[in-house]
Image 1: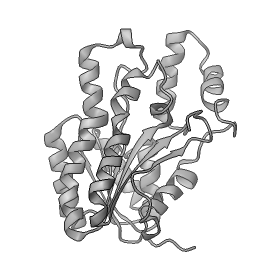
Image 2 (image 1 turned 60 degrees about the vertical axis):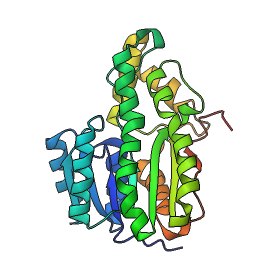
Image 3 (image 1 turned 30 degrees about the vertical axis):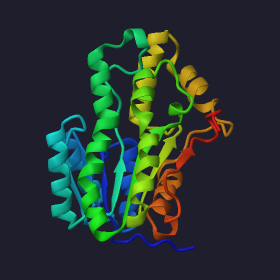
Image 4 (image 1 turned 90 degrees about the horizontal axis):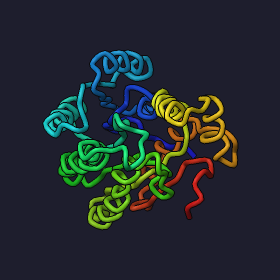
Length: 265
């Protein structure tokens, strides 16, 4: 089966490293027009130059998911550069105070986390929907984690703050189907990224455990496949399918790509 997504206009948040960057590279190679973004100007510039080796129609701008004015500018930039928007892929980093147990969190931690994971997704969705509705076509994909269905005490900020995204996607799927707009949530398992290593490094220090042993126990051994996922080959391929015309009957769905890590049904 040949999947043609050439020319799709895509906005990917938190996309200058890790998961977001891997997805951006996969889509750039398929001919998508892409806007990438992060808080670091240097990372944005470097990523744009790198991805333009595959596709000249890659653009970048700095933005902060916790700053609503920044998100206004991000979407305006996207429309200006791409001439519209077909796909929103919502990705995010981690709160500064993660990993942490509930007693170790402050109200400020919670406010930041809810802004980062939930309110920014709502804000961006509201900003892109008028364009998708007007053209009567769109794809919205929220990237989340397997832990929202099997919460982990040490990730209380993330697991509580982003769990409502599943409900949001389901509700929006009911409202937006008549516009040929699909809304889905992907629950990620473990992929080898600097962000994942940084988080587990902090956890190993907190627990006073060896990093390599903790990585093996908490990442590799949790999956029955006994390995991590491949961002470009496995996650990228899933995204390519979901933003294609072949996926039009998939909406409001929660799609795990976690190597069987979660015990949730």
